[in-house]
Length: 239
Image (tube, rainbow, N blue to C red; front, side, top):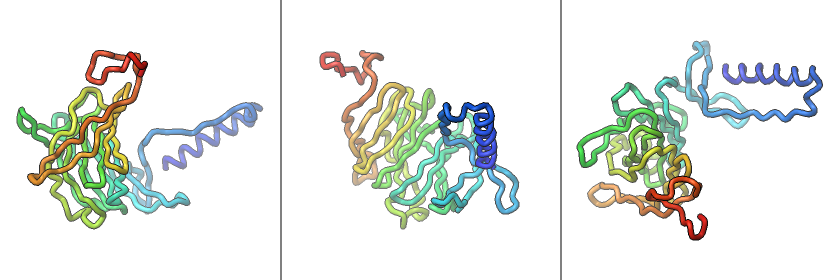
């Protein structure tokens, strides 16, 4: 339904450009954010769904989601799983849902974690990623909870759906105004802020099942902002 609607609106725009003689002097760029996936399939009503498509655009799989609560979606290419984060109610810890590659629901866990003040939970807008060791990182976004927390998830596609514990491992990093997170093929972790990206070495898990956070490697970003904080610019070398 959303693709049909967007196609119709774009068609009207292009027709107007042709009719007014402006088509040859206009560049049309189509872009979007993640948006809602609204579709009515197999006679079902139009509702918010998470969906996967084939390379030719055919709809493959879909599952109902509550877009008013959804804060992030992550595709784990290592386990072939999909993670979503829901912010259920104000004041309640977020819920992480996980699915197989066909979007069959496999389970969920809440984002409770333990710090020196006791048990807490990540609430509101949040982000998520995972590395090849099965470490799942969840963090508070913007002005929300200022931590990135690690949980032990599955390490392979075979384990996906069978390892459902998602035990809390520890806290990777505490900071303000974090925006997103990503990992690379070496399991280095990247945390973005409005004016810089922080890089951490790969984390590990010790024999007691506790997170050993990767060391802070460095950052890149703007040097015309706050020069007095932890990630101060190298003013001598203008970087």
